Length: 138
Image 1 (cartoon, helix red, strand yellow):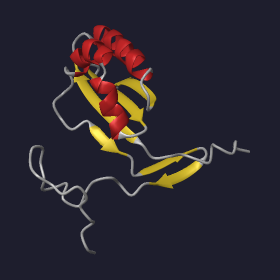
Image 2 (image 1 turned 90 degrees about the vertical axis):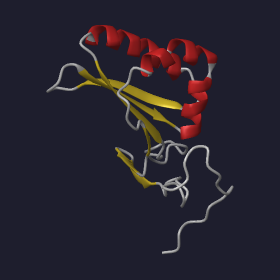
Image 3 (image 1 turned 180 degrees about the horizontal axis):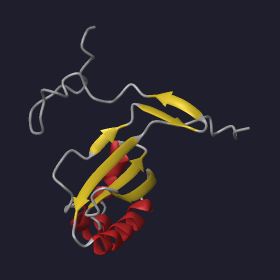
């Protein structure tokens, strides 16, 4: 039986960073150190460092966080800016932030509605937006 506070999975936020390096051993060491620093931050859930089976120079850092806010606050901490940002800035330039919409584990399954505003596809950084944008009518 599950403890009362452990009612099942809760959707969160995932950061997925891909790296290409001929020095995988050096990259792994740097990523391990980075994950150790990030693991001390509030909202950190987990991290995995994986290597592609078919492409040994391709490495992925997968991190789970409670929210995108906890991830961004972690990245803004001084110790992270010094020790982690130089490492993760070497990631392949592509989207890295993903919100969990469905989670399943041994305890069950859970859905999340998503946190994107209705105008997320049209409003860009530096452009004006309303404080609250209602969902588009169905």
